[in-house]
Length: 238
Image (tube, one colour):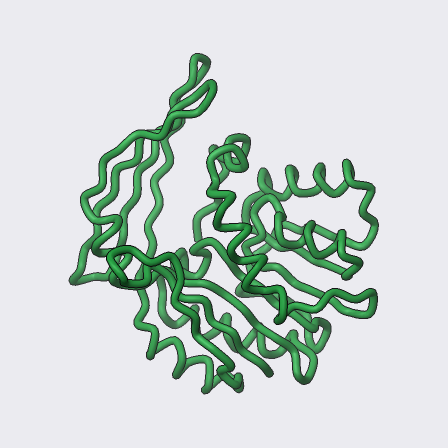
């Protein structure tokens, strides 16, 4: 798993806000806020979803591997005077909770950052354990088509007010690995981060989820390009 340490101060300035809005709309009838409900966000980054649902009255916990991301998330919670939310640095493969949450969510390619397929199996079992009976698990994953057709051999710039990002990517179909290099260039610094993401077959993930004890309520294709989905969102119930 990658920590995103260097890019944390820039993250909320370049992340796709439309993606947030689309997912919030998708979740509207699946994650029902209430003061008696508890939500766990794994790979929470700067905590957008945890903060959103905490403001709706839910008791929320966010966990991320990056200390820098967690620091930003905690600052957001403090600025909003939220007392029903907790952010912690940690490894989501080692979450200690059992039967504590009504909802678990994982978004923004976090599962693609898990490079060992065996760890996916471990994670699904851990999530199942930490949910209450009838609890809901929702996550997204890049489609293999999206990784191959939309990211393969990409080389482009994105421009912002006081910095720009140079993206370079390469997809290895034989290994199902997407290698991404990003350079954040500003007047005061140049930051280079490299990431590797693994692609997973939708049907294979579904089998692992069923084996972990989940009931599959839906698999929603999203973010279409040339009429094909670049991403899937899984909706599961314990």
